[in-house]
Amino acid sequence: MSFVLMLAAAFSVGAVSVGAAAPATPSESSQTIVVEGLRDRRKPANDYLDKVIPPVFDAQLGRFEDRLCPSVIGLPDNLKGEVMARLRQVAAAAAVPLASGHCTANLMLIVVDDKKAMIEGMRREKQAYFYGIGNDRVKRLESSASPVAAWQISDVIGADGVPLRFDGDGFPRLFTTSSPSRLTTTTRSRLLAAVVIIETRGLRDVSTRQLADFALVRGLAPTQLKERVAPSSSVMSLFNPGVRPQDAPQSLTWWDLMFLKALFDVRGDVIAGTQRTEIRDRMVKEMAKVPPEQR
Image (cartoon, rainbow, N blue to C red; front, side, top):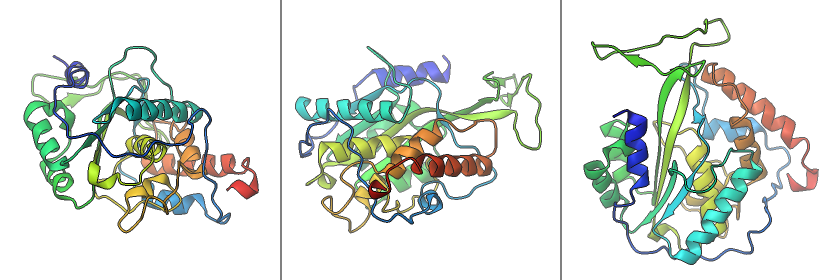
């Protein structure tokens, strides 16, 4: 069975047990997109990107190529409905392609009492969740003092979309019609799934709007091998050490929205350094359209 099929099977079965429902606070009406304005008009895109995707030159930034299909586990039905609606609403506003109807989840928000126990159970029963994730990183996710554990599952395909082929020796080989150049590569990184686990202890005074926006941006932002403190200009700072929910952004910020739009518009067949530059330039261009008083 191919990995993609294995992953689909894993995500389509909700058999992994979760803890009690989270004490998330119902948000205000989510019928309209509310983006929190940034008062510091001088905040450059680089200040945001330096913490979200630090400069790298030997890798590529992946994104979903399949339509986004979010799933929420561990919340009571009323709060789950609010979070799901907000997830899909903001994704649409960020021009992230969305799946409709019944779909196989590829962005999972899981609320539990004990993330360590949850991760251990997933490692035993759903190993596909950790495809390509090293044991050292999994242990760091388990032992971290943060109430959040998040990671992405990705693979590499040809720049023209042709999958790598594993020959009899077990090594992947690329058969492609694309030719490399100084600016482009013969491969691109593809995001297959993202998992965001949040412990209930971290959700006191957190609104469903904050929870949904955090999960979306955190799940789609390229993850780093070493976790970094999120910029204060992002809803991802919601769970930064010492930050209270009432003092954190109450929704995704303009920088978050512009980042997601740029991420899903950037070329996939170039190295991360070039991708990062393109993302920054797109963010700055889009921010110029935002009324100054709302930045």
